[in-house]
Length: 279
Image (cartoon, rainbow, N blue to C red; front, side, top):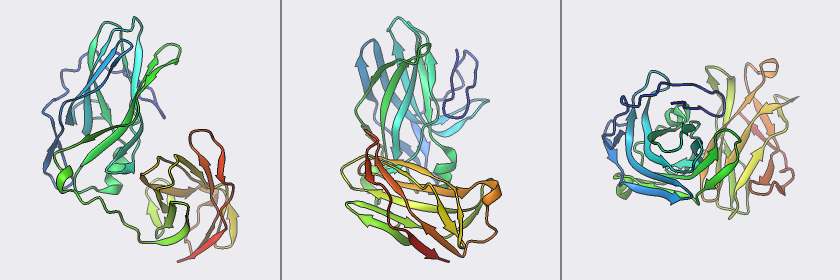
Protein backbone atom coordinates (compact mmCIF):
# COMPACT_ATOMS: atom_id res chain seq x y z
CA UNK A 1 0.00 0.00 0.00
CA UNK A 2 1.22 3.44 -0.89
CA UNK A 3 1.30 6.16 1.74
CA UNK A 4 1.91 9.59 0.29
CA UNK A 5 3.53 12.05 2.67
CA UNK A 6 2.35 15.44 1.41
CA UNK A 7 3.68 19.03 1.61
CA UNK A 8 7.43 18.36 1.24
CA UNK A 9 7.75 14.75 0.19
CA UNK A 10 6.14 11.58 -1.15
CA UNK A 11 7.16 8.32 0.45
CA UNK A 12 6.14 4.78 -0.51
CA UNK A 13 5.83 2.46 2.47
CA UNK A 14 5.12 -1.26 2.78
CA UNK A 15 1.73 -2.93 2.48
CA UNK A 16 1.58 -3.98 6.11
CA UNK A 17 0.28 -1.80 8.94
CA UNK A 18 0.72 -4.47 11.56
CA UNK A 19 3.36 -2.42 13.35
CA UNK A 20 0.81 0.29 14.14
CA UNK A 21 -0.26 0.05 17.76
CA UNK A 22 -3.84 0.90 18.70
CA UNK A 23 -3.57 1.19 22.45
CA UNK A 24 -5.68 4.37 22.46
CA UNK A 25 -3.21 6.39 24.50
CA UNK A 26 -0.73 9.12 23.68
CA UNK A 27 1.88 10.51 26.04
CA UNK A 28 1.99 14.12 27.10
CA UNK A 29 5.27 16.03 27.49
CA UNK A 30 5.10 15.09 31.17
CA UNK A 31 4.91 11.39 30.33
CA UNK A 32 1.28 10.75 31.31
CA UNK A 33 -1.16 9.13 28.91
CA UNK A 34 -4.32 10.54 27.33
CA UNK A 35 -7.18 8.72 25.65
CA UNK A 36 -9.89 9.73 23.19
CA UNK A 37 -13.46 8.52 22.65
CA UNK A 38 -14.03 6.52 19.47
CA UNK A 39 -15.46 9.10 17.06
CA UNK A 40 -17.10 8.73 13.63
CA UNK A 41 -15.58 11.51 11.52
CA UNK A 42 -17.54 10.91 8.33
CA UNK A 43 -19.84 8.28 6.80
CA UNK A 44 -20.93 9.42 3.35
CA UNK A 45 -20.08 9.25 -0.36
CA UNK A 46 -18.51 5.82 0.08
CA UNK A 47 -16.13 6.86 2.85
CA UNK A 48 -16.38 5.88 6.49
CA UNK A 49 -13.71 7.19 8.86
CA UNK A 50 -13.58 6.46 12.58
CA UNK A 51 -11.00 7.95 14.95
CA UNK A 52 -10.06 4.99 17.13
CA UNK A 53 -7.20 6.13 19.33
CA UNK A 54 -4.45 8.67 19.86
CA UNK A 55 -0.97 7.37 20.46
CA UNK A 56 2.11 5.72 19.10
CA UNK A 57 2.53 4.84 15.44
CA UNK A 58 5.54 2.62 14.90
CA UNK A 59 7.08 2.66 11.45
CA UNK A 60 10.54 2.54 9.92
CA UNK A 61 9.78 5.84 8.19
CA UNK A 62 8.54 8.83 10.23
CA UNK A 63 7.25 7.08 13.38
CA UNK A 64 5.25 9.21 15.78
CA UNK A 65 4.34 9.20 19.45
CA UNK A 66 1.47 11.62 18.75
CA UNK A 67 -0.65 10.16 15.94
CA UNK A 68 -4.41 10.13 15.60
CA UNK A 69 -5.20 6.62 14.37
CA UNK A 70 -8.19 6.62 12.01
CA UNK A 71 -9.78 3.52 10.47
CA UNK A 72 -10.92 4.41 6.95
CA UNK A 73 -13.16 2.24 4.74
CA UNK A 74 -13.11 3.17 1.05
CA UNK A 75 -16.17 2.11 -0.98
CA UNK A 76 -15.95 4.85 -3.59
CA UNK A 77 -14.83 2.67 -6.49
CA UNK A 78 -11.54 4.53 -6.81
CA UNK A 79 -8.27 4.97 -4.94
CA UNK A 80 -8.46 7.91 -2.58
CA UNK A 81 -6.04 10.03 -0.59
CA UNK A 82 -7.15 11.04 2.91
CA UNK A 83 -5.72 13.73 5.15
CA UNK A 84 -6.41 16.43 7.71
CA UNK A 85 -6.76 20.13 6.90
CA UNK A 86 -6.89 23.23 9.17
CA UNK A 87 -5.60 21.11 12.05
CA UNK A 88 -4.94 22.46 15.53
CA UNK A 89 -3.96 21.07 18.92
CA UNK A 90 -5.02 22.78 22.15
CA UNK A 91 -6.13 25.78 20.09
CA UNK A 92 -2.79 26.21 18.27
CA UNK A 93 -2.44 25.67 14.53
CA UNK A 94 -0.22 22.61 13.94
CA UNK A 95 -0.02 21.00 10.52
CA UNK A 96 -0.73 17.36 9.84
CA UNK A 97 1.63 16.86 6.85
CA UNK A 98 0.77 13.19 6.24
CA UNK A 99 -1.75 12.09 3.62
CA UNK A 100 -2.53 8.44 2.96
CA UNK A 101 -3.71 6.45 -0.06
CA UNK A 102 -6.36 3.74 0.27
CA UNK A 103 -7.49 1.45 -2.55
CA UNK A 104 -11.19 0.96 -3.17
CA UNK A 105 -12.76 -1.88 -1.21
CA UNK A 106 -10.17 -1.67 1.57
CA UNK A 107 -10.19 -0.63 5.21
CA UNK A 108 -6.88 0.73 6.48
CA UNK A 109 -5.60 2.64 9.49
CA UNK A 110 -4.53 6.16 8.62
CA UNK A 111 -1.90 7.44 11.09
CA UNK A 112 -2.52 11.19 11.11
CA UNK A 113 0.63 12.49 12.77
CA UNK A 114 1.35 16.13 13.46
CA UNK A 115 4.35 18.39 12.90
CA UNK A 116 6.88 17.02 15.39
CA UNK A 117 8.99 20.20 15.43
CA UNK A 118 5.94 22.30 16.30
CA UNK A 119 4.92 19.89 19.04
CA UNK A 120 8.39 20.12 20.55
CA UNK A 121 8.38 23.92 20.33
CA UNK A 122 4.96 24.26 21.95
CA UNK A 123 5.85 21.68 24.67
CA UNK A 124 2.22 21.18 25.67
CA UNK A 125 1.87 19.74 29.17
CA UNK A 126 -0.90 17.58 27.73
CA UNK A 127 -2.83 17.03 24.49
CA UNK A 128 -6.31 18.18 25.50
CA UNK A 129 -8.13 18.59 22.19
CA UNK A 130 -7.63 18.15 18.47
CA UNK A 131 -9.56 19.98 15.77
CA UNK A 132 -9.39 19.44 12.01
CA UNK A 133 -11.28 18.97 8.77
CA UNK A 134 -11.10 15.43 7.36
CA UNK A 135 -10.43 15.52 3.60
CA UNK A 136 -10.74 12.97 0.79
CA UNK A 137 -9.43 13.42 -2.76
CA UNK A 138 -9.08 11.19 -5.81
CA UNK A 139 -5.52 9.84 -5.63
CA UNK A 140 -5.08 9.90 -9.41
CA UNK A 141 -6.75 13.16 -10.45
CA UNK A 142 -6.53 15.08 -7.11
CA UNK A 143 -10.22 15.91 -7.53
CA UNK A 144 -11.78 16.78 -4.15
CA UNK A 145 -14.35 14.22 -3.02
CA UNK A 146 -15.29 15.63 0.38
CA UNK A 147 -14.11 17.80 3.24
CA UNK A 148 -15.87 17.85 6.59
CA UNK A 149 -16.67 20.85 8.69
CA UNK A 150 -14.23 21.29 11.61
CA UNK A 151 -14.34 18.30 13.96
CA UNK A 152 -13.18 18.57 17.56
CA UNK A 153 -12.05 15.60 19.63
CA UNK A 154 -11.41 16.18 23.32
CA UNK A 155 -9.03 13.86 25.13
CA UNK A 156 -9.14 12.64 28.71
CA UNK A 157 -6.97 15.65 29.67
CA UNK A 158 -9.46 18.29 28.47
CA UNK A 159 -11.43 18.78 31.69
CA UNK A 160 -8.40 19.90 33.70
CA UNK A 161 -6.33 21.57 30.95
CA UNK A 162 -5.42 25.27 31.25
CA UNK A 163 -6.12 26.80 27.83
CA UNK A 164 -4.58 30.20 28.58
CA UNK A 165 -1.75 31.20 26.23
CA UNK A 166 1.45 33.17 26.65
CA UNK A 167 0.78 36.81 25.71
CA UNK A 168 4.26 38.07 26.57
CA UNK A 169 6.35 39.85 23.94
CA UNK A 170 6.25 43.09 21.97
CA UNK A 171 2.82 43.77 20.49
CA UNK A 172 3.17 44.67 16.81
CA UNK A 173 -0.54 44.59 15.87
CA UNK A 174 -3.74 44.58 17.91
CA UNK A 175 -7.01 45.44 16.18
CA UNK A 176 -10.35 43.87 15.24
CA UNK A 177 -9.71 40.68 17.18
CA UNK A 178 -6.24 40.08 15.74
CA UNK A 179 -3.30 40.29 18.10
CA UNK A 180 0.30 39.66 17.04
CA UNK A 181 3.32 39.77 19.34
CA UNK A 182 7.01 39.34 18.57
CA UNK A 183 9.16 37.17 20.84
CA UNK A 184 12.89 37.40 21.57
CA UNK A 185 15.27 36.29 18.78
CA UNK A 186 16.65 32.77 19.01
CA UNK A 187 19.05 30.57 17.05
CA UNK A 188 17.35 27.92 14.94
CA UNK A 189 19.50 24.89 14.19
CA UNK A 190 18.71 25.03 10.48
CA UNK A 191 17.49 28.56 9.71
CA UNK A 192 19.75 30.67 11.87
CA UNK A 193 18.64 33.65 13.91
CA UNK A 194 14.83 33.82 13.93
CA UNK A 195 11.92 35.50 15.67
CA UNK A 196 8.62 33.83 16.59
CA UNK A 197 5.40 35.76 16.02
CA UNK A 198 2.52 34.72 18.26
CA UNK A 199 -0.83 35.27 16.56
CA UNK A 200 -4.23 35.21 18.26
CA UNK A 201 -7.19 35.26 15.88
CA UNK A 202 -10.55 36.22 17.40
CA UNK A 203 -11.62 38.20 14.31
CA UNK A 204 -14.47 35.97 13.15
CA UNK A 205 -12.53 35.20 9.96
CA UNK A 206 -9.90 32.70 8.90
CA UNK A 207 -6.63 34.53 8.27
CA UNK A 208 -3.59 34.25 6.04
CA UNK A 209 -0.71 36.47 7.17
CA UNK A 210 2.49 37.30 5.30
CA UNK A 211 5.52 39.55 5.73
CA UNK A 212 6.79 40.65 2.29
CA UNK A 213 9.74 42.56 3.73
CA UNK A 214 11.19 43.92 6.93
CA UNK A 215 14.15 45.88 8.25
CA UNK A 216 16.73 44.17 10.44
CA UNK A 217 19.26 46.47 12.10
CA UNK A 218 18.27 49.17 9.61
CA UNK A 219 18.73 46.97 6.53
CA UNK A 220 15.79 45.93 4.33
CA UNK A 221 15.57 42.16 3.83
CA UNK A 222 13.01 39.65 2.55
CA UNK A 223 12.01 37.38 5.41
CA UNK A 224 10.59 33.89 5.18
CA UNK A 225 7.23 34.01 6.91
CA UNK A 226 3.65 32.89 6.38
CA UNK A 227 0.89 31.83 8.75
CA UNK A 228 -2.64 30.53 8.26
CA UNK A 229 -4.65 30.96 11.45
CA UNK A 230 -8.27 29.83 11.64
CA UNK A 231 -10.81 31.84 13.60
CA UNK A 232 -10.59 31.29 17.35
CA UNK A 233 -7.10 29.79 17.10
CA UNK A 234 -3.54 30.78 17.93
CA UNK A 235 -0.29 30.26 16.10
CA UNK A 236 3.41 30.46 16.88
CA UNK A 237 4.97 31.12 13.49
CA UNK A 238 8.67 31.49 12.72
CA UNK A 239 10.05 34.52 10.92
CA UNK A 240 13.45 33.61 9.49
CA UNK A 241 15.75 34.90 6.76
CA UNK A 242 17.33 33.58 3.57
CA UNK A 243 20.92 32.49 3.91
CA UNK A 244 22.31 35.61 2.27
CA UNK A 245 20.29 37.89 4.57
CA UNK A 246 20.78 36.08 7.87
CA UNK A 247 21.93 38.51 10.57
CA UNK A 248 24.46 37.56 13.22
CA UNK A 249 22.49 39.60 15.74
CA UNK A 250 19.10 41.29 15.77
CA UNK A 251 19.23 44.62 17.54
CA UNK A 252 16.11 46.03 15.89
CA UNK A 253 13.33 44.58 13.77
CA UNK A 254 10.90 46.78 11.83
CA UNK A 255 7.96 44.83 10.48
CA UNK A 256 4.77 45.34 8.47
CA UNK A 257 2.34 42.52 7.75
CA UNK A 258 -0.25 41.70 5.09
CA UNK A 259 -3.44 40.14 6.46
CA UNK A 260 -5.88 38.42 4.10
CA UNK A 261 -9.07 36.42 4.37
CA UNK A 262 -7.96 32.78 4.12
CA UNK A 263 -11.20 31.73 2.45
CA UNK A 264 -11.39 34.20 -0.44
CA UNK A 265 -7.94 35.84 -0.49
CA UNK A 266 -9.37 39.33 -0.10
CA UNK A 267 -7.22 41.79 1.90
CA UNK A 268 -8.30 42.55 5.45
CA UNK A 269 -5.30 44.78 6.11
CA UNK A 270 -3.22 45.47 3.02
CA UNK A 271 -0.27 46.56 5.12
CA UNK A 272 -0.07 47.12 8.84
CA UNK A 273 1.71 50.20 10.13
CA UNK A 274 5.41 49.43 10.58
CA UNK A 275 6.42 48.68 14.16
CA UNK A 276 10.01 48.59 15.38
CA UNK A 277 11.00 46.14 18.08
CA UNK A 278 14.31 46.83 19.82
CA UNK A 279 16.24 44.02 21.46
